[in-house]
Image 1 (spheres, rainbow, N blue to C red):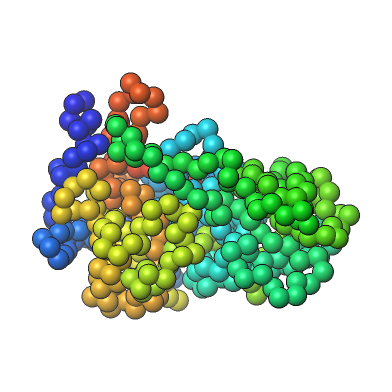
Image 2 (cartoon, rainbow, N blue to C red):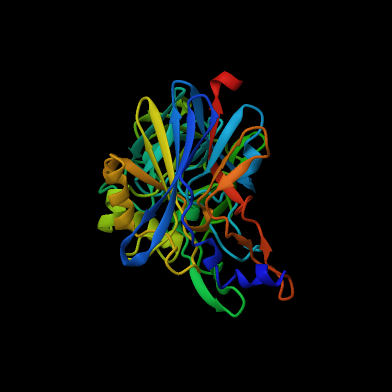
Length: 407
């Protein structure tokens, strides 16, 4: 127990190069491990999952309740990868109703709309697709059509009548506090975590209900809690009368895509090239201390996709392991080039202590690589740290890999 407690500040036990190996969880699926030596005597271990899209099915999954990654590797699923950036706070008493940041579609239900243009991974008409998704679209409230755009986008110069502005958990700001046991704690101030005040505005909280998304609260003048619903829709005077409690909300278009053609989707992080160049303002505010700062080393998860193959790589590291703290954004881009990937076409998934790949390893139990140093932080002053390396962090999104030949 004492050794586990010491891992909260000293994780050097994990700072060792991996053996070089390849495992094949299923036909068309390969997981390879190899170490990479970096500048200044640093090290990372790369775990690369390569998936043949003609022999497998890839699906973004998300959940408000959350899950552990290994729990997804059941039935025909042979592997799972930690997914998109989600809200992370150490305050269990104040969490968003929809923790996924920006776009989230699950089972053809639009759970969360984007506040700003970002790349996204979509299952579009049955096939995985990565594309930049503009934070614009259309929806219907009580059957009446509206155009919408994200709140972080420049407002339209002359908004059309009935135009709506989208707010959500991605508008939050993470703050940090020193903590004697854990080093720091993250949270969000509920008093300031609201839509801007505006006497001409009406903010509508949209909540997922058993009968579909509906308006569940109205906030004249703004000041609506960003975490109260799946997202919020802002209208300006004159307010249409059909913006009323209980009114059903149906998203019809996201960017130029018909929402009905999108089976599932998750917003992605910046490309490896954009992160290396510092073009990350769309992500920084809601992630707190940006993982894309120059020279900041973090574990990272990177995704690349074309018509035939999906590749996910975890570049491992532990925050309290000198020489094994992960890679910088520039090093990640350089490693992409070394693997013959264009850094502009490789995208970040959630990194840091979330970086993990779970997979079947023969007939044994489900195995995992990445973030094996992970500890469950204590919620009470006298509660111990608990090692949770194989299960890792409680996640709200992931990618699952299903072998068509094992269905």
